[in-house]
Structures are given as structure tokens and as C-alpha cells.
Length: 246
Image (cartoon, rainbow, N blue to C red):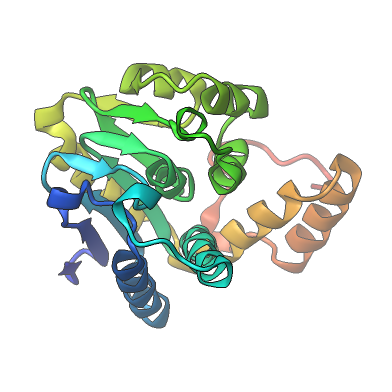
């Protein structure tokens, strides 16, 4: 759903009867939607939300689908992983608005967004271990969105956690009353849409690149980027006196 007047787009998961699970069809639809966002230069914020009282209960369980040959199964896992990478690399700001249950790959979606806000009744879990498997792909996004030890604890302790606890653990930025979720999301999206759009895409790219480096290399990279792209004159110094040489 485009809101062109505000340069904000909303992307809704709308298969509540399946728990908004990431089936092959849903993953393909999300890839197509993100491709459209990538092609637009008039979207500053993408909000990822869901209808039906559930955000996303993960991928389709093997017991609920026909068995796939190994190569076909690998292709589906790759498509879902590519979706997470694509979401994280979008040039615009991404904001997850979470109402209802979130599990497994649903948490990957949240962790792949730049911001995450949830209603107070939302529940989060990574139940893979209880189903006899390790959440190999889910751990990638989680261990980058929150402290690694806390991410590992989520994978090992499969109990459901409430939104307040997930905010303390670092996955969520804000928790609001369920009735206020959409209005607060709209307000936050409007604030984010007011940021200098020309700086967002290269800034996000710089942030993710330096994360993969050791500290010394990250500073060298940051110095190169900062001296190559000095702040615009109109940005000002926000009342802080600059020191010589800075």
C-alpha cells in the first residue's frame, strides 16, 4: 500500500489462516514486492506489517507440506535467505510493526528490518529445537540484530517471550499498547521519512560493511568514507563548537 503523499509504503502479510507463514508462494510475492520498492526512488520508509492477529509463525512446517527432494529444499531455503538479505539491504528505511505471534523465520523478518515496534501482546519464540532441528538461518539475522549471547539463549530456550522481554534483549526498539500500534507506527514512519534520503542508502551500506570488519579496519573504512563524503554545509554543527582538524 503506497502513501505517496508521505513517501511511505506499507507491505502487509495477509494470510492469517496459515499464520502468515513464509510459504514458497509468500516468499515469491515478497521478493516481487521488494523488487518494486528497490525500483522506486520516491519511497523513504517501508513498513512491514501483518493482518489477522498474527505477524508470522515462520516457514511452513515439513509435516504440513509434501516432502521435497534435497535440491528443491535447498532452493527454498536459499530463496528465504535471499529475502532476508534483500530486506536488510533495501536503500530505504525499513520498519517492522508487529502484532500477534512471531516465530522462527518471522523473527528473521523482524531482525532484518532497521526498526522494530511491537504491540504489548506480541509473543516471540524460536521453537526449532523442539522440532528436532537447529535454526541455522534464523541465527544469522538474530546474532546481528542483538547481542550474540542473548541470540543464542533464544535458540536454546524455546519458550515464548513477551514483547517487553524482547525489547530488553534488544530485538525491539519500542513496545506500545496494541490499540496504539498503527498510530505510533505511522508517527514513527513519518519522522523517519523526514530524514535526508540521499544519506540513508550509503549510510546503511557503510554501517553493514563495517560490522563485518575488525575495529581497526572499520575505523580505516569509516575515515575513508567520511573524508570522501564530508557533511553538507547546511547540516550545521547543532551548536557544538568544532575542534581544529575535525
